[in-house]
Amino acid sequence: MHAHTRLLNRFPNHQLLRLSWQLVVSIGLLTVMNTVLHLIYAPLQSSVSLLYVLLVLAIAASFGLWPALLISILATFSYNYYFTTPAQALGITTIDDATRLVTFLSVSLLTSSIAGRARNQAITSSKRAAELDALYRLSQTISAELSLDRITAAVAAATLDILNLSSCRILVANTHADLVLQAHAGSSDPPAEEIVLPANGRPDVVIQVARRASEPPLSATERSLLTTISAQLMGAVERSRSAEAAAQMRALDQSDQLKSTLLSSLSHDLRTPLAVIKGAASNLLDASIDWDVATQRELLGSIEQQADRLNRLVSHLLEMSRIEAGALHQSRDWEDLYDLIHNVARDMQPRVAPAQIKLSLAADLPPVRFSYVQIEQVLTNLIENAARYTPPDSTIEIRAQMIGQPTTQIEIAVLDRGPGVAPAIRANLFEKFVRAEAPERRAHGSGLGLAICKGLVEAHGGRIWAEDRPDGGSRFAFTLPVEAVPVVCHD
Image (cartoon, rainbow, N blue to C red):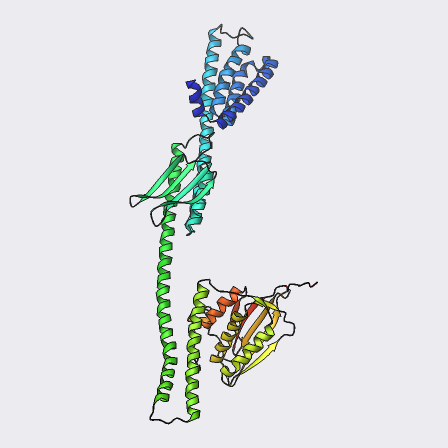
């Protein structure tokens, strides 16, 4: 019973099965050889022992040590039975037969042992080469990766494959030092072994592994390999955390820079209209001056204009905060672009005067499903932007046409005769607080209008861009996707 248990511990079930069929094949080969040699006994009598040794070598090289040792013993009995006197009987009658038999057995055992060890070493070397190759590929994969999720997933999958596991789980400590499951490969078998990688006296990374019941536990070599994988994983985890910390620092720096830009922009954009309002109100309240009606109306108009400017600034800030928070409220419906563009052009004409707004609209524009208020704001912001840079006596043109093959989008463009977009800011033109400089700009913007346009257009599934016109000026365009208009059936 104890011998059987030791055998099972040494050879797992799949190895016992492989060993069994190897023994069956080896015995079959020996039987065939015995038959052939017995039939041609006379001419090969002096070379029979060498042929048996060749068979032992072939089996050792093909199947390993244990089948070769068994065949060595069986071949000795076969040689004694068939080729020593008395023939076809087990026994030794002469010293010469005894010498040949002992020599044959010794040579067979020695050659089978040497050939078997050579085979095992070749298999081990091949396995080590495959493991080293897998470790190299794993190191290449995780060395170029900074995402903790992808790093741990790659290590779990590679560990499962390299060590022939049924399950591999990787736990990583979070910011509260609690171990959480980061990656899992294979089945849900309970872990049989684990490697704990500490940091600051606490478990930081844990690798839990399990094998199938039919597989042996990890050997010392495999544990060493698992330790090597764990070291690679720990280095990758630390690199990922360092990258995340650096990204957080960059985000903080960008946040500080954004706050500084915001304060600088708002301080200017708030001071200017407030100064105008304060000056106009003070003049109206000055009892020592008798203002005529026309002047009073002009001062009151200035107050109203600057109040509208402040209102637009606050609206832009609120809209930008909603876009960044992903809290845009969109109430989309089927709208007529002709009506929207004509209404915006009519409302904006007094604000851009003396410049003129010109419309060039294709005749085949279909109804489009969008938020009227938001696309109205996009077009308004683009016209305001054009008015800041185009010469006062020039024309601001609005175009709309179908594009795409097949025509699946509508392109709306606002064209001006300004100085164009400087290449240095073109890539960041639609970011917050990016403003182009113009020598004769008539009004300062908040630096939020184009960023709001980008957020609103992309929320509708379109895109927005800017380009220079060949004959001078800029062209700001955006697209809206065209959907099939639903057909309503009436009874």
